[in-house]
Image 1 (cartoon, rainbow over the protein chains, first blue to last red):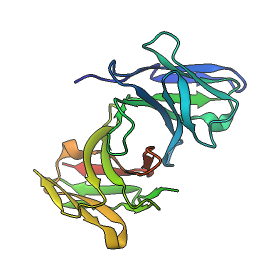
Image 2: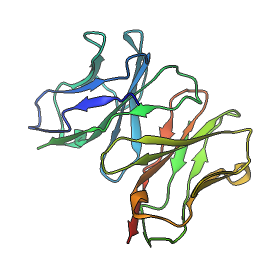
Image 3: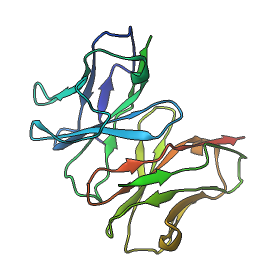
Length: 115
Length: 113
């Protein structure tokens, strides 16, 4: 079965540094998502992306965050100046449509540790 | 606004025991969908089942069964005769008019041999 792939699996960074988390969604999918899970807390929606623009974003997704699809296959999440509270598991997901009953296909996540 | 509560943080059972994972959801939408995902040690969330708000029939798939009760806004998941391979984190989610699934915090299931 096709997979969503995420790199790196672990990222350690210093507070204030920029990080880029990378994802390759399933090739025929059109809708892309980033979620995150702070340890012990719920999986939180960050942003959705369609047709090369953000379609929805949560309150968490402030000016420190940005997303991009630079080359038609990769989908990236950039955090400009990381904070300690950005430490979390970040999940990328994709699906072919945006209807509510359509399941999401998730990657294995990137564990981001901000020191 | 949507919300999912999975009150059980961690459940530990011995193999062959039955176990029920609880999920309580909140949504203002009249049409919505409920999901369960499994997160094995490899990390990715894997889709297990989807239910729509108009179908309260319980569903059984092998050792897995799901009980949807609209009156209590619950969508519970039961594993019968649990196995070590069932050890994972299980997430419940709801998706309605916003099209964005809202997840709970997950329940970690540990099945001991």
